[in-house]
Image (cartoon, rainbow, N blue to C red):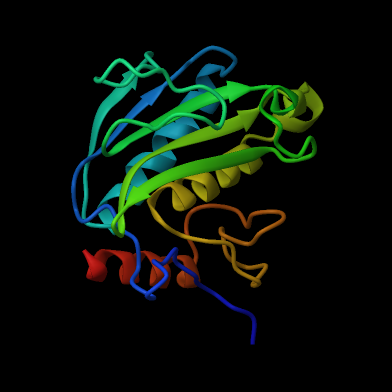
Length: 184
């Protein structure tokens, strides 16, 4: 049977979780039209309660955490409990050029400290990104990574590794989120 859920774990096998703290997120709106912004908000607002959290800072445009350290590419650290969302050419940050989304996460001692979700502007042609339901699936997929879900081999789940199933989260995705919530 295909794997239906998978969570990020410490080397000792302990699930890495936000431990119930509020998910603070800031979105850089450049390169994202209103429909795409709505889908990203929707994904983050959907994932937060499933891991025992809530969302704060909806809609801020800054990519600079409170400590003043700027989030750029795959370097640096995001501020504690913050998720940053940005649209960027993946050729600029060295990600696989065919990927449509990516999430980098930071954790310390088994607890997440932050994440950056990237959407690939190289793939934003109207013919492709006009399909808002697919963009929604990618947004849910990357939000799942941001709170600790990993890829799975079941094509019926949002967290399938290659082409996400349509959102919202499917039974296997929900089982993985429940494991993360219980681990907090």
